[in-house]
Every structure is written in C-alpha cells, then in structure tokens.
Length: 426
View 1 (cartoon, helix red, strand yellow):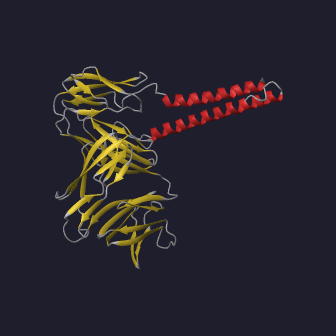
View 2 (cartoon, one colour):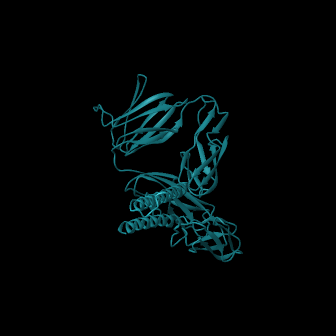
View 3 (cartoon, one colour):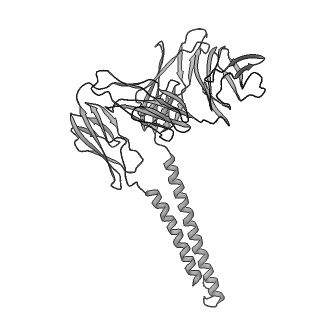
C-alpha cells in the first residue's frame, strides 16, 4: 500500500510539472501597455503604436474612428481634428490605452540629430542634441527612447548614459510622433583584457589591447614597414597604403617586443588613407577615403538589393564598383522608414521593428543611386521557446507512460508470485 501511495505521488508531481509547462507556455502578462500614453499628430499623418512587451492575440480599436483610425497592426492614421483613444486588447482581456490628439498648424518634417552613431565606454555619458524642422513648427519638443535600457539609458533631455557593453538605438520623436530619427549607440567594455573584434571593409578581425597614448603601431607587408604612434585619444593613422595583405602590430612603446594588439589587414584594389582608433576593447575605423584610383566609375552595385532581418539584427552593406580600379566616392545612405530600419554613416542597417523600409544609397556627386528593400520580421526566439516547451512536455509524458507500464508489470509479477493472478493471463 505504501509503494502505491509513493507511486501515485510521483505521478501527481509529474502531472503538476506538465501543467506548469503548459501554464508557462500560455501565460499572458497581467498588464499590457503602450510605449506612449499619449501622442500628437497632424492631419493625414500615420504612426505605428508599439507595446512595451510582447502579447498574444492583440486587437486594436479607436473610440472615434472619424478622428483617428487604427488597423489590425496598431498603425494609426489622423483623419480629422480632435482626440481619440486607441485601445489594445489581448486574448486574456487585458487592455492598454493611448490618447491621440490631432492638431492643426505647421507639422514637423524632420528630426535632425547631431550624429547618427556613437561609440561610448561603460560609465560614460553623452548629450544628444536634436532639432525639429522646420523652425516654424508649433511644438518643437522631442521625446527620447532607448531600445535597450540595460545597455544605454536616455533621459528626457537627451542625456545618454552607457551602462554595459552592447548596442542600443536611441529613438528621438517629435512631439508629433509621426516624425522621428535614431542614433545607434555602441557601448564597449572598460576592461582591456581578452580579445575583441573590429571590421574593415566588411572583414572581421580579432585583436587585443588597450587605449593609451604614444603606443607604437607597425604596419608590415612583404618586407615593407610603416610606423605610427597613437595620440592622447588612442588614435593612429596610415596614409597612401596600397593594395595587399598587411599585419598590424601595436606595442606599448618603441622598446617593447610583444604587441598588445595585432591584426591582419587585407586592402582592396585602391590606395587608401586609414585612420583607426584603439579604444579599450574596440579598434574602430574612423576615416576611410580613396586618395588615388584611376578612371571614373561606370556602375555601383549593392551586395544585396533585398534584405530580410529579424528585429535587433544588423547588416553592413558592401559596395562593388566597375571598374575595380576606379576611385570609390563617398556614399550617403538614408532610410524612408527609420522606425522599421535605420542606416548609419558606416552603411550599417539596423532592424528596429516589424515592417519594411527602403534604404537609398547615393554617391556624393549624385550620379549613382541604388536601393535596398529591407523586410523586418519578428524574432524566431519565441518559436524556439515553444519547441522547447513542447519537447519537455513530450518527454514528461513519455516518462509517465513508461512508469505506468513498469508499475503494471510489477504488480502482475507480484500477484503471480502470490498466486493471486492467473499464470496464463497477460
């Protein structure tokens, strides 16, 4: 009897575990909320509402569709002057609300930032300056948001605080939320130990080192040697370096024999000027410009004209020119939808939210324009989580089944031994 009780308790524990997994899989947060409680729009503007956290089975509605309409993705459109409340409801009945005010007057057309990308170290700060254009706009205020507050936090005045190594996007929206811009913030670790990576011309290298002035930097190629020294900010530069394979070695001083940083550099078919930054755990290309090159460009192609990214992913666009011996001009990049995907001065595309965006690359002389369509989808991590939960549940069910079969056989063998169970019966 005691064994049967123990067995029943074991089965009960297993069933509780299965139920717990199921509850974990289907649990919906007690509260859902928009990233904004209210926003202002001008006539015929659109804005994509975002929830602070993921939720299932969301439906959207407007208390006054004649003023503000909303579709099944949370995209709102201002229709006429007035106010309306947009409601989001999940499948458990939890709700979130955002008040949308539709205003008259001069609407903002651009939020211009002092920079579209920043590199900070842990603990450092930067005041991001934003200007709303045109200057005649009724409300020039802006709102700041961080895509990852564990990496970089921003206050209402645009002061960014770097917290830990990683990447975050600081989004700056005008008081009329239909206009925004973004700044990619890369935070590096304070520690100078271990290895780190940097990218030049789309090729990834691994080095190790520290930020320090008056360090000796040596560039070698087949017997040729070029030397430079880091300045007070850890920068160093080489001018008119021809094509070929090079090794870079960084020494604490001219008397050191063991480098504190090293890398292999492969140059393309152009003479180039390079200025790099040895900064804690990052070696960053600050300036890259064709100084010579021969002939004019006949065409420029993008490595990818169509790109699919998950939210949070990035991609460095690579250009190919014809002929390869021509000088590569400066290329400017812009996104037609910064809320979905933005591109920085290094031509790095970062996916921010589900949707699509067109990235346009234009040469400084305006002769060549190329476009890349970016489609951003949700992360597949949730799918993987469901697969893991399903697999765990299947394993638990299998354990329970094996247990019942074994327990049944044990009882039959015991009854046969006691002469209770007929020997010929299975």
